[in-house]
Image 1: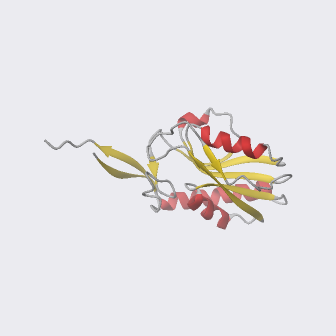
Image 2 (image 1 turned 120 degrees about the vertical axis):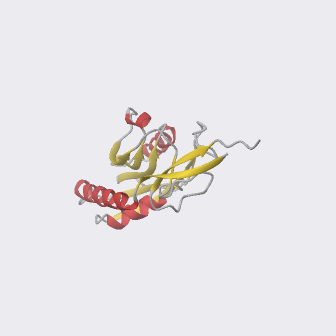
Image 3 (image 1 turned 60 degrees about the horizontal axis):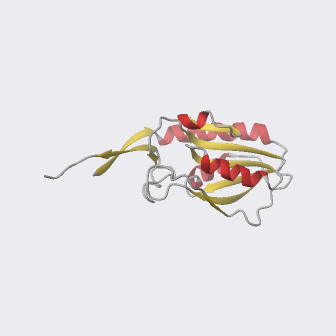
Length: 179
């Protein structure tokens, strides 16, 4: 079985959307104590691009969440790390994630952060799949809505590969048999 990549969202479109998101975030958080919480590893490239465009002074921390393993579907269990010592009490917190899919991972993160007493808590994700639209999450900013397909690039991976791609690509598996 082989795989191939098909471009879904070009780098220039991602850059333009990141710039627009940063302008919206600046408008909403001007004069507030903004803390960005970046979900590792997938959101790191998106977050770095976004932070460089945000003019509002902010701090940032990272949390790690794992739910995919080496597959293309969430395994349903979420493991969180990086929450110890995270001081967000009284701050306006914006969680930056790569993709909203089943919602299990981000819901676990939101619950854990909410227990730390932020003044406000909102979510910014580069991508959102259809199943995530109906979820009860504090979604404030979405880069792109995409079909229910497995995607890589811009920090997102398949078995730790393809994170470095500048665009968002759908990963297509080819069934090939050798007789």
